[in-house]
Length: 140
Length: 140
Image (cartoon, rainbow over all chains, first blue to last red; front, side, top):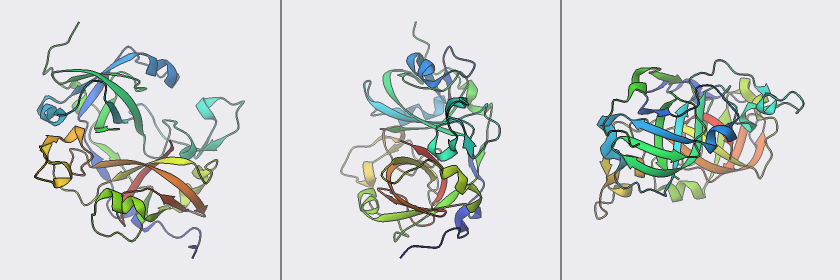
């Protein structure tokens, strides 16, 4: 049976706010937002908090990783946005886009793990700028 | 040139804590943790905060979505864990596992969008239990 539309989102205040702390940060040559494809093409390093290095055990180069990060430069959001800010393209809902301007500015990108050196993960395919706080790493 | 190991994670306190609010919650028949494959096999609903429904524009049934959620029952973490809590399997680092017991208890799962009815998304393939706060939805 279909539920009615517009029922209250009872979960919305149960466990909120949800507070996370960065486990590390991104370092690369991109200190300003650029098209994601440009940033992804470059090499990035994820510098993990040294206290968490044991948590990398079992990750092997060549593995694909999911990187969860905070769009720390993003402020505010719109529910409808032009894709990539291109006003020639029709607006879409924010949940149908990967725009950083979202209700919770969380980024999720799958990357290739190239090498681990101490607490530094060298990765390819990350579209986060220099200084981005990293919240989680998971196997893809 | 390789960077030295164990350099300080200078980003770790820059922008922290990171605070998010649930945009909705999960409803399904699973109110206790079970193996992810069991929960994924069932149907789930994501009940979105009604004020955000416009943000769904452009999402079509059949589309694959990335659901970002909070493991709200998880408390604490270990850097080394037995996969699925199975003590017969060797321990691995938490970042090589999808365990909910992680430094930031964030879940990321790709699901199939079956139908949208008002502010309710019917999905298949979600491995989050009933009541789970949802933080973000993105196109896969």
